[in-house]
Image 1 (cartoon, rainbow, N blue to C red):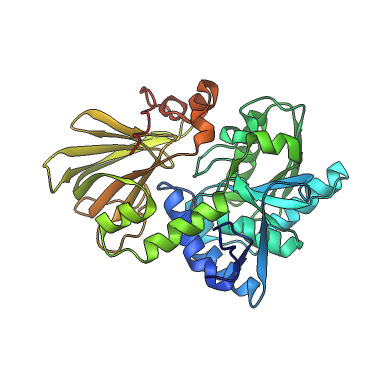
Image 2: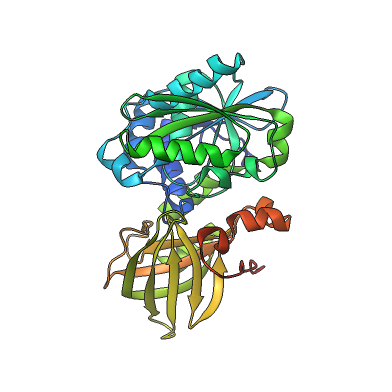
Length: 359
């Protein structure tokens, strides 16, 4: 048993020995997006050293929580890697602006690079990391975070770009954050770190996807010990949709709606053709024209041999890939207005969300 975990499976901390598997889990939960985690995993493991990042549940010790994440081009993020100060500086900026201290840090989304980045931010700030996030996977837009499905009295947030520009926004509408930050990062380095809050515990308790850190760690460990596609599907609690050679890859589309194209592959076992519509993440899957999975479920594409996740921009004709689906966070399915925020139409795809199959 890892020192950082309780016997009942609840995570109490992330140690250096946990980081590789945690990063692998967040990469899978990136659903084809969220950025490459390798650099952030390396930095986090080195920063932790012989210590750990405390992980806590929402409770009395989390009266005021700051959500942190990254916005902008994940491709640029790979080329121009963070210095390590951008996220802590964004957190400090919202604390200065609001005059409120944070008791804990929560990942804006668990999928992709933001999961390890949030852990690194908590470590740098000397704060615990909340075992939760605001998506349960990756999503491309700030206004799609669970925190913003229902209105808030006000939104205070800070962004620090890769070039050092600091932007603090008090906004009545989260779409204003999306507009301001996207415009800023497009002219200032291509990506930015952001912090939102501090958010009161009672608000966050109703809007957070809980257990996200623990899920990423479990998924990552299961993936690391899997011997093949079928074993991976069984270990991570997923469902195999198709496995075979990629026939076609299309890219382009509407950057505003984040719909960039699609991929098709022929299932080697059945001969069926699976087509996966992609935005910044894998969004909607059809097999022989029949919808079989969609957001808010987690559509995950992995290399059939290495079992490593494949991002939407790296799939190539001739690749041998497997497409599987993991359950999405129940929070999104609980009410229609929540589901609509992350359903296919929210990404510009004219299709209804596909209900999850109960095993």
